[in-house]
Amino acid sequence: MKFSFVILTWNRYKFLEKCIAALLSSISGKYLYEVIIMDNGSTDCTPEILEQYKKNENVRIITRNKNYGLKAYKRLFFHARGEYVVIVDDDVLEFPESVDTLFLDYMENFKNYGFIALNVIQNEFTDGAKPSIDMYTEETKGDMVIEAGPTGGWCACFRKRDYNKILFRFLFTKVNMKVGEDGLLSALFWKHLRLKHGLIKNAYCFHACGPYYAKEYGHLDREIEKYKISGLDEHVERYKKFE
Image (cartoon, rainbow, N blue to C red; front, side):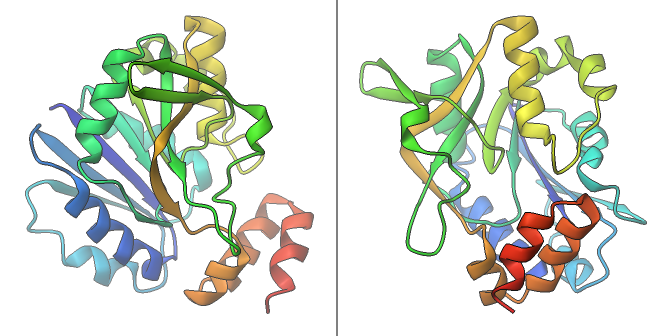
């Protein structure tokens, strides 16, 4: 198994429906792969969306009976059998062509990196969750360019063998909305393996994050609930402005 694409989802079925379809169409199929989708206790139409993929031999569905938050990634990564694991947020709605080949090329050419993500489309409605460009520096190999700097988990790849080296540290560190799985992985890969993190400069996905798209797709209440549970009051107030 070369690739494991892993998606953790909870009550965002309209996003999820588009995400899965876009992801599957973007995978070249040149390498053996699996798409693992963990339903983190959804109470909306998520089960009906996932039902459509139960006969797809490349898709595995894991259903949990309640929402375990981001710590569910600890269980999700355990199920990944691929040499490379790609985290995919369920609100990523567009991917570059042959996303598997793209990640493989960068992971093989930038061996000093442990966590590499796609860049994000930015428009008047979302920044894609990417920090300011002045937080990045470029590293180039031929025509391949990485923006070294903060690396979100919207669509990000790491080597399973690297993960295994920091496995117990990851398992015994709290993961939540304040310390996400992406930031923790980046920190652990750097601290213990001296592996950097960054974005593929010229390969973009559409990460439809933020209150505008949450309202557009009917998930605004879900986002407000998520941030209330996490105690992130600033985000709650930001999203409430779109009610």
